[in-house]
Amino acid sequence: VAEVWNLHSCWSWPVWCGDVVAGTFALTSTEPGAPTPEAQALLEFAASLAGTLFRLAELEAEGEPLQDRLRAQARRDPLTGVCNRLGFEEALNERLAAAAQAGTPLTIARLDLDDFRAVNDRHGRATGDACLRQVAEVLQQRLGAHALVARPSGDEFNVVLEGEPPTDTLERTLGEFDLRVPLGNDPLGPAEPVRLTASVGLVRFPADGRDADTLLRRAGEAFLLAKRNKGGGPHCWAW
Image (cartoon, rainbow, N blue to C red):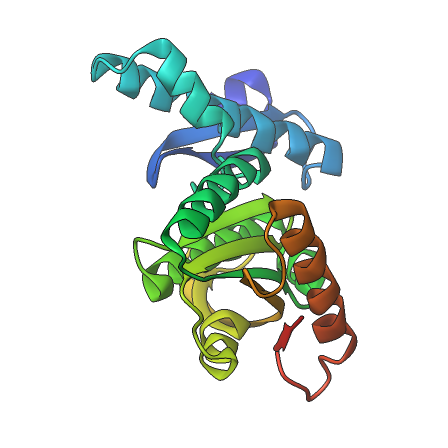
């Protein structure tokens, strides 16, 4: 086929359907070389869209109503499967209301991966995306099924925990990640070790605030302190 159409390069991206690779989406060119940033962005978008359509088809076959499917999709980050910003805000308000009624405390954390841009610059977006997916998985595994994990944007994650775990415990749980991911632009290549750290801002409900806006603002302020003092200092800062 390549000879017939005089093709000299082919770039492909995995089509994720949930946590399974359903196939690949490829772009070909008559010119040799790596894809331009615009072509790579188009490739990622097309593969993500195809994955979403595959998943919707699966859910339709399972008989889930269309409105419920679309509502759930709109509140999930397609890369990691955890809540996106909209889903997190809704779930946080629900948990705050339940905690206020029960008289129980909550811990809210904002964390950003340190120097994550260097991972993308050195190894490519495929490696960066693999890291983000694995960080989301590790957080959910470490914190348990009752924890709320969200990725509002980029390399930022938010976490809501029941109770008030000690800061030094959260330092280890939220601040360090030893991952194994494919390096380079082959997302299906052999896994290599990647170590990441995160700067974390912590707030407690109701001690640090009783509404979502106040708590998230103060978590952001604590996070900035952690970011500013990350060199040799603690990963976690409590407001």
